[in-house]
Length: 301
Picture: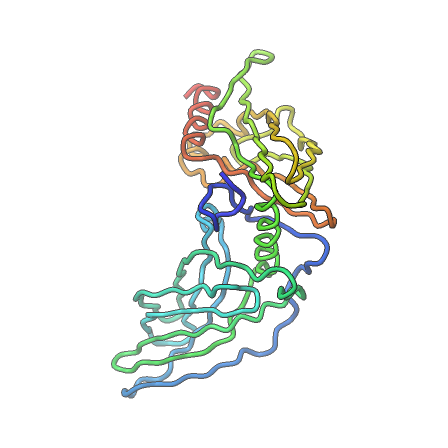
């Protein structure tokens, strides 16, 4: 498990990841949307649509992003291609397929979260500058449309900023949850111990501190407080591990059956330049199954 899904490993950035220092927060007010279109043969009217870029709770676990295409007109249209270009993205999120968007409704088109622009080329003013190109069809008419894309949750500066922070962290150390779940009896109830393993890369001069570990909707710290860690990590340092103690947050079978983020342990890290990011250590499918089994045994299901 690694903090960057770009390298195909299982530790990914948190939905609520935040950056302090050098990265701005919410987007500034945007000017009226710019639009343009070209059409092929046919007599149908141009589709009326908007495109919003967002990451939902469902998107987080698969490191996806949603291109939300809304039909603001009175006639349905078919979308076959949507791409959003932005100075935030090193690679544009791009959806290809075919789906009908009914009048006054929207379709959520999910694609992999794009690589972020980092370093000196990164735009840090927080204002999303996305431009969407959409190929749509109405009856026998084809349209190539250009629209300003929105960031209605004002989250893309934050999310892409975390991707950049994770790239730096990725070069410094591997952080993983061990797949073995240990259970200890304490005060008459079983406590789950999750081992957070930190393995430095052995090259470079990167460093950061793992400040805290928190609770989730499925697991709470034992005792029920944010765990202060203060683990200093350097690229040239030695491997280490920290045991995190958890008990179930709730004994509700539906919490397990419908769980999406309950086995993603939130961590906060601080880099040498003072930048802070919230990340998660995501359990592998094997560890996730063991956690679910532990919760069931604890709750007596």
